[in-house]
Image 1 (cartoon, rainbow, N blue to C red):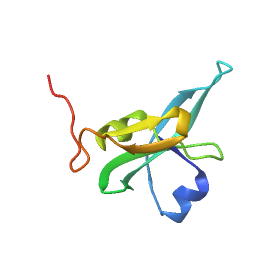
Image 2: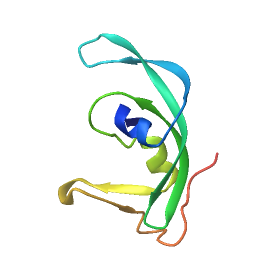
Image 3: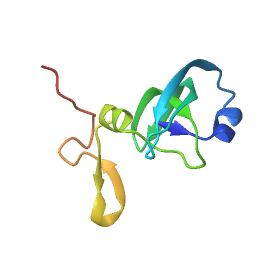
Image 4: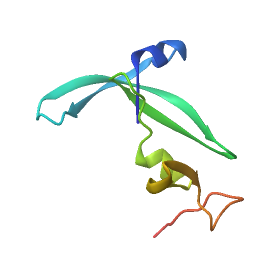
Length: 93
């Protein structure tokens, strides 16, 4: 998950550590890692950390999986898993 520096400042998040991020052009940069952050979507929630960079927040795969959300690309929509509308589910092996 990525958030902007402005969001990190507004939420008064402290830097927990530094993380390396490899950009599309191959360059490796070091960014702040902050948290914990409580995310909420509809009736789901989870706690995550986030890297601080860029000018657009990005919800990652880990919080989406934690909240049991699915993406509908054709509709440009995010929703709770239709087979588990009342409680988040997951797999443990």
